[in-house]
Structures are given as structure tokens and as C-alpha cells.
Length: 397
Image (cartoon, rainbow, N blue to C red; front, side):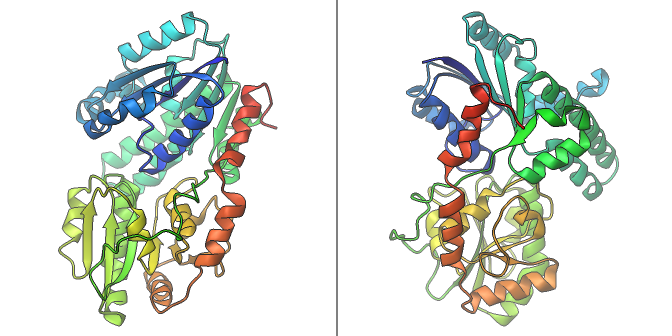
């Protein structure tokens, strides 16, 4: 078995949020084929207790705690050096020393997850290096900018520009760069045409056996509740923005027509803004739960009203796998091949979003078609075969 270095910006376990779902399944796939040396940062103390779940699959493991508050202050050094703040945020001498040791020992294959991790192997030109960008992060910052007051709007536009420069540099240095969808890859090629020939993509999958509607799940809702559910990490700004908009602009019309409707926001670390939504009539905020499947299984509608988004939304795939009627915004549907009207409900604007949600609550059931789409197109093994080809010397074209 060959040795492979896998660097991830956030510990890839437990797979309970979007980026960790993809990084975990990639890790499991690589660990079945290589002796994996895994280096990752830990930004949630709760995740530390899961180290043993990873250690048994690794040739070596290096986890480094990173405090988000301290790291944010440290990242401001980028304003002096001209760098992207994201790159400085993850700069850490202990991680660099550990990576250098692995490379000096002869590790010849490298996979990085998130562009910030590339800084630790930019000099490793003797190794075959694959970058999983996942999303075009620079464009997320560009989307954030208009939603913030000055000077944050200026800072976010600056971050978008500096991060795009860094992403293009990484794509030019690495043997291949991968995104989460054909559209995401096309957008990056358009923004960085000089490295267009070094960019490809592989899609996200979903574990359809785990997210199965065939199992029995205890009902987490009160009797008679008509549940509308959103799942996701609730300290992530696009999710915060999505549930805040839905709760304030969409759900009042839903509840006026269906008084037993409840909007249930399920996800870890809800921000103060999200917690405040629980004061609105019919809105429930759960915080972290041990298993999201019961909340999906017993909901009449799953909503993904994202207004800021890149790539593929795992929350949409999971709702589809659980055979629910999923109401999506155009941004949440981007990158997925689900057909509006037969596999998902597409809505844009508050009035239309309320109408589509009410259709689901009234009994419009797209669940069987949604799950069938997942079964035929979104299996992890098929998606990850692209990474195998590239590690073995294949090209992105």
C-alpha cells in the first residue's frame, strides 16, 4: 500500500455538517486504498472525543486545536502581508512541522481538502498533489459582501479577490483541482482561465442506506404538528441567513394557512440570531441533536431556502434520500440534477416559497421520485472514482 497525506481544515468526523460529510467519505475511500496520514484542525472541542474513530483507519494522525476567536484575530495579519485572511487563519507551525516530517519520510501522494491546507505542501513538487476545493470559496465572500455594512463589506470584497488569487495559484501548482459540481468548476475556469485545464469535479454523494425512510424513527414532534424542517450547522452564515429569512418572511403566511405548522431548525451551535427565532410563533430551535433522521422522517416538508450558496447542498440530498418533499431555492438546487416539479419543489421569493411549502403540507408528495434520483445518481463510490483516476495519473480533461 502506498502512503498518502490527507490534509483537512476541519476534523472529518463526525460527518454531521456539509464539509465534514464530504471530507469524511473521501477519507474512508482513501483509507481503503492507501496508508493515510491524516492532518486536521479541530475547531470544536466536542469533536476531540472522536479522535479514536479516525485513528484506527490511519497510518498516523495529527489533530491540532484551533480556537476560532484567536484564529480570527491572527488572520488579520493578512491585511499587512497582502494575503487572504483565510490562509493566515489556518497557518500553524505545528502542522507545518508534522507535514514536513511526513514528506521527508517519503510520502508521495497528497490530497488537500480546502484551499487553505495547500500552504503546507506548496513546496512538495515531488509528490502528486490533488486539491479538493469543494466550493469556490472566493465567490462566497463576494456574495457575503453586499449583505454587510462597511467596513465589513470592504473586507469581504478584499477577501474574495485575495482568495481567488490564492485558489488560482494552488490550481496552477497542483496536479489537479476538483470542485463539487460541473457548474462550480465552470465558474472557476471562467474566473481563472489561465489554469482552466487543471480543474475538474466530482459530485457529493449520500449514504442512502443510512438515510433510509424504511427504518422506524421515534417522532420528535408533538402530536398533530405539521413539521417543516431545516437541517444544518447553525453558526454558518448562509444557514443563519436562510432560516432567518424563512422564519420572518415566509413562515407567517404558512402558519396563517396551516395553524398546526411548526418550523423546526435542527443543527449544532445556533447563533444568537437563530436562537432569537424561537420566540416567533411556531418556530422551534433544537440545537445539536444525536440524529437528524427522525426530524426528516416525520416532517411533511424539508426546506432549503438558501440565498447565499455554492456547490451541492448535502441537506437537500439527505431530504431527498429520506423520501421527503424538499422545497429548494435556485441557489440550493445549483449543482444538483433533481427535476423541479417531479423530484423537488423550486421556489423563489417569499410568496412562492410559502405556496410551495403549503403544497407539501397539503399532501403533495415527491418523496419516491426524489429518493430514486439519489439511488441512481448520488452513490459515494461512483462519485469518488474520479479521485482514484487522478491519483493514478489521470488528467482533469
